[in-house]
Length: 330
Length: 220
Image (cartoon, rainbow over the protein chains, first blue to last red):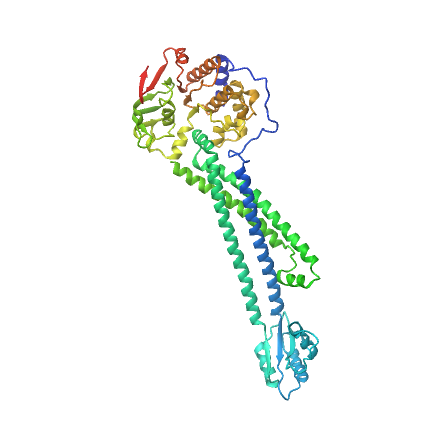
């Protein structure tokens, strides 16, 4: 370098400074950047892409958040149901249902793996039918089965077959429901929700890749001269495509952060609305289905990962497209 | 340094715009490339830069067969060539300083390693006060000097200048040409494309490559 500067000084002495310094000062304050982006950051297409990415991130985050909320809630249901079973005693001519119910409770209580037993009275069993039949009806003539709810011990395992045999030996018309059917249905529902979320996420990702592809093509067309100049000063295709990758990664980060933040805000707003509706029947049903809309750490992490992942995908897709385009130019 | 043998170029199925071009550019040489507007001077410079492929003939650049080079090898050779475009080709979103430092940045050099060099060069071409200005507010002459500084910053072995005095007043044009002759004396081969005969007449004994009707005539 010193030899170059020396040569310059010698040439300066020989040729003289080319021109007098202009008196006008157009120095842009704060514009002493070290590594200004080679692909201009501010453009209408860039802002449009940030908006598209923000919308995609928002939709993907909402989908993932809803899937996680439902999955968490259904896991809670499954835990509750799995720790419970029901003994059902159907009315049999000549049998005293109250006595049979007490006998079943006694047998269950003595079984290993049972934490507690709650036999339902006739009135309690009739109350269970009220949501379907309405109140104020005389249900005494109906053959309503008697229920005994058995809470299972977390630490000990109950042998359901043994309990079933012991009950059948002394009580005719008895059956034991371990809620296996419910559990299976819940598991299917939770898996369906997760599968649907994955499908929606894949569609959102595909739409975003297409949008990034179009935006990259547009940006390349708009910056053809930059590509040409970079080629003339000796830049390799990988260097040029890396510049576009950085450009689109930054756009992706901005869009991802915006969309992710909006999604988190939406969950807060939905949670607030849910808390306001908590006392109403609709609110209870919503809480039963989606939980309390309380954002756990896993949802924050998921949204952050989605936003970062979308930024990475945006940068990667643009780099591949630019590189292939430059290769075709050869 | 550069050798053309029977090079021809046509676009698509059209007529040949350059025919049987044969010449060489020796190390530390100085030559004008001239001819009327539209004669193909810029096209010939682009062929030397390997941004166009000839339809026939052979081109050797720095003793490499240019037609068999990979894209990476072409990029490597271009780093040994400085180019001053007729329309400057400065990047409007970069300051004068950033434009001039661009070839070094592309080489992967850290900004701090070339800062003094770029500043010195900008002062030398009289743009020390315009270092942090964006090209759209530069005058034609200032843009020209910024483009020249960008071409010189890598200390090229070969300098190609396309109408470098086309946008400046005669006084500045003479000084720019003196700059190119000084560069030549420091060891750089210089090719200046111009159609300004009066300008060339100021330099006696300089080799002239004259393009006309698609053919090249050499006057040593």
